[in-house]
Image (cartoon, rainbow, N blue to C red):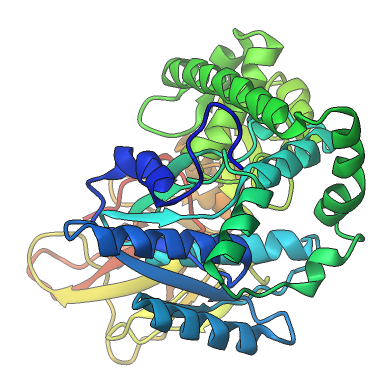
Length: 465
């Protein structure tokens, strides 16, 4: 029976929820084979049958590859979708957890990555999480000491990849869903891992929440209301952080100016850092201990220091009044030396990109190299010198980096080009004028396509051309 004040749970109820997304070109159900997603798929099929202009419907099944019966579940989902006349897609992902990850987190990341990759413009992905799931999520966040963003639980809708994500059943109880499935004679999969009380969510579901409901029967509705209040508060925090970001952001970059950050009170400063990480850099916000170190130790430190705070997702550094975020950098082995045929493109180690060379005459700065010369690419070890174009004297690489304010952690990751053991070029920034060809003499122009690991590139010099 539907709760007082709400229509019965049926296709018309789902239609009322989907009204705001009536322009969707396709509804994609995240279909696990469980009762919740099966009911959602069945409701959509009923709507599509009753309305010729209804958007197309598809079912997307994610095989995480971590359960002994995963292949059987995929077969079941294929059969159900075929029986409903609904397009079906099964995507295999690597859901195995890595060191430092929980199995649940690894599976969730793999699943949502697959969702995002699958969606097309105009698609709306429908997830079958319901009111009971929301209660579990909020209580889990509470036990983790989450702030208002975590206590807001699962958002009813959000952007995802090229499409949108919608949870249309958040106001529907598990009992209502099961009752509908039984009434319609649906067959679904019961995942035995949902009975494992070693998993926090299952412990809450089977042991804690029933006890709470015996004292507070309206627990789900009350927790849902609290989640909505938290979502409003979280939205206001986001709005404030966005205003602060535009004031504190360094001109022409996505770094933050530390002097302006220090002008904010501590709570507002931490709020901005959360926004900067989650919205600008799109990484998970670290725990409170890491944030506290950034706000209390890194930002206020002396200008001549370059502090570093690292966690699983990345690292935050400070340099010359700027706060930098970077993803964790792959290690660059010491002593790397790569022979290079300038007619080819060379891949640099540690995700640092590619070097290529264009042969020709005329305009531009080109280096001299003949068939008999030996060309190699290496990285800084100390003591390197060159006489760059536009300079009157020989300069040490150390001084050039300092004068151009290149952050210290990049200095050893910029490729150096040696011609017959002489330093000829530093990336594509500086060329030694002693190895520069005359205007009408053929030579090689160097191009460095930076890799994804070299972030905040606006702090690097412009290429010489």
